[in-house]
Amino acid sequence: MTTANGFKQEMPPKGGYAEIHFTRVIPQKLFKNWSLMAMHIGMTCYAVYYLKRRKRYMGKLSVERFDHYNAIEPLLQAERDRAYLRHMRYNREVERELMKDVPDWKVGTLWGRPIYSTLPPGALPDVHVTEWYAHRHYKQWEDYFFPDKWT
Image: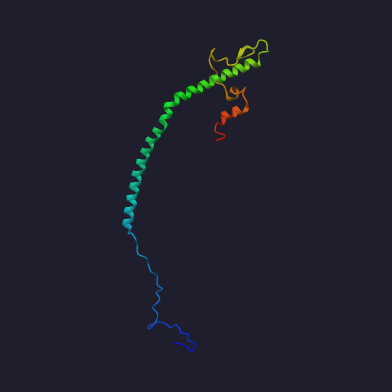
């Protein structure tokens, strides 16, 4: 239908518009219950197999990873012992230098009496860290307790 100024009115199609569906459309299931259960059992079996295999692999890897430490451990212990002896010698020399003007002072004793009376002569005492670093600067003591402070 056209009007006088050339405008054409839009009209419904012949026979009318299609019917409007307003009822609920239930979607179809992608999997049935039995197939979901079968997939769950299959995935669980594979997960158990994979985890057991992974645990065995990680066990072998950890043995290999710490194998080098076991090989070098005696050398590290020897270096620690050498550092301990060097430090004890340094403490003895500092004590000797510090008390050189005191008469009757014997290094390693307290006025001639041994400090560690239960140790046999010539044995090294197991001293506390504060005694070990008694003649050192605080920063060196701090480096002992916090070796990775600046990293």
